[in-house]
Length: 115
Length: 113
Image 1: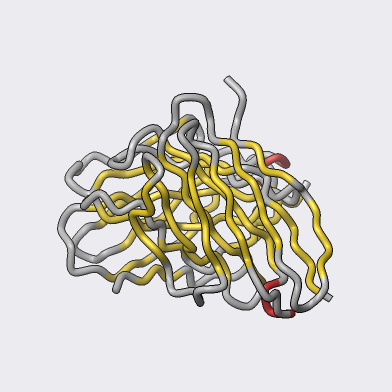
Image 2: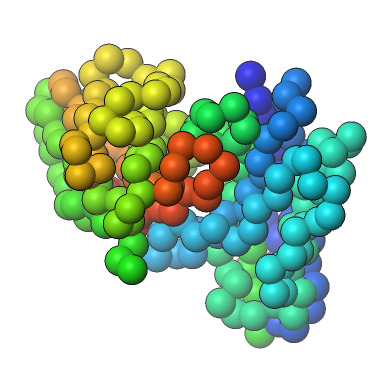
């Protein structure tokens, strides 16, 4: 069974600074997808970024980028130029590429932005 | 395009009762998944439906069931409610069943007293 581990329950960063959230996962599969989801206090889960395991290039979405290390099974999220609106719970998630829609989530990292 | 909608948003039930939650996916999306979110267990997968068929089920007791209609709307039902069923129930839809992002609804907050 796949597992996802987020070892940082809480993180804080000064506004406009850069922060990196860590995620490791365990799987025996070679083809899969990884995601970062953001859940603000309003509770609506929002997709931040996704990475296909077969792609070597790290995904980037505006201020959000990932560092995907397949051999190390590591998938960290970097947020640049942090903004107050980035404050939220961030969840790392894994999904098999074998047609199984199940997302396996980590326990989340609560990110606080300090003005 | 409208997002995933869930009704009701909040619900209070008594132990032993049953409850039905509804999810309307994004227009054109055919896959609907359900998740339970609690402080203790985090986010756990309940089941996924695609074209009215349950494709995958998480490790939950048989009291948890669901279905999907021809218009892709989905319902989940919990019978004989227990205090531990208090949770935020999230629904997510995706365009197809492979390789597409899941988009989440706002959730239904269920409280069992």
